[in-house]
Image 1: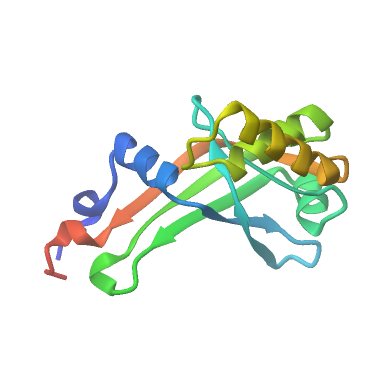
Image 2: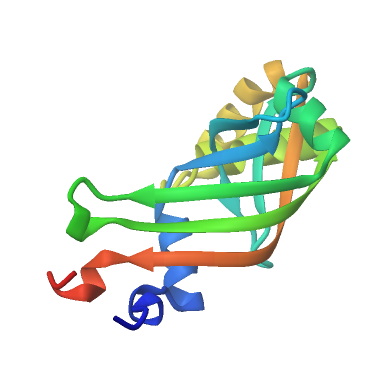
Length: 157
């Protein structure tokens, strides 16, 4: 039976829409013991398609990605087999230790999907600034996408 991979792959537009509508990203870095190190993180995507999240600067993720900047990222959804949808992204990572960028990233992540006014944005900025100094920003530069949407199979497997 021929592969139906092309039938279930997402287009570039569908990938972007799916990422924009998703909140949690699983980051898989290469751990110190040779095992993959998967961790869930909230994220946002910039206009160029780079993905951003923040984590504590001394976390295992940061140590792993400083040693080896390659990461696999997973965003997925679906409760039934016929609903499974996802994107794996192979990416290179920049670890950024900059207070202003950390605050901006935290604000963007925490305001995703919400229309907030200037006063709400200021309050959010002040709230995230309390922990931002301890955080590093992970910026992922996508190199390859692997995607699937089982709903495109129309119930035929």
